[in-house]
Length: 245
Image 1 (tube, rainbow, N blue to C red):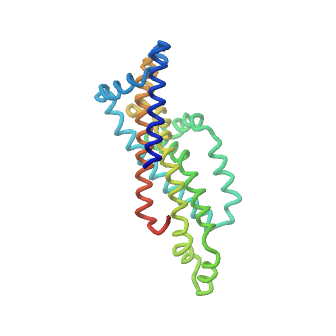
Image 2: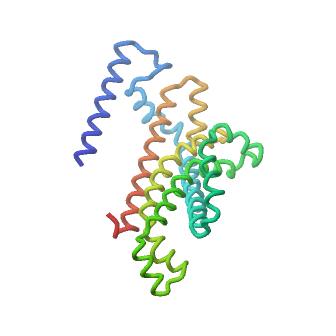
Image 3: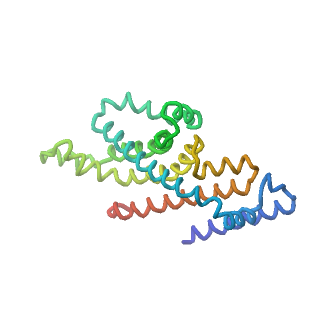
């Protein structure tokens, strides 16, 4: 609790300094609004931007599900068929070095303006931490226990389901926490492709109208969504992996 209290006080001090500098230096609100102006727009402008919240939340959740399915599938295949790893793993690394903002327009050309290109964008952003963490978890299984299970006649799939997969669960949640925080930004980028609703669309409209306070409101919601997702994943981990500390 002390940690969060210190962090809250630190953020409060930063906001006070920000507010004071904007007022003392008479900074143009079209350049950098004061925190008080952002909070005012956050509260009074809710009726204007609330229609954009649910589409972004739904897109984030769908993207996380697709990222988890794809990330687990790739990790399991590479672990159970190790001969593929030298060929596939470099491709996974390459996928993380391609700027998403560059490949996003190509996805629109290939798949149109529907849901699929948006989910692909989020998956490209989020699946890699899940896959890498799982692979590390599979490989870190207790070697002595594995030898004992093999001597006892355990088959490859039994080793995987009874030893390697449970051992990899904490690693999986580590990767999922990272992916969860990335998913919101992935959703925002995907909404820039051509959505009619969503925080990404709201940011573009606000930016074009030079309403910087509304842009910051969208940023605040992005941060809140990321924190909520992180917290939910952390609670889920404590429920699922009770034996791990």
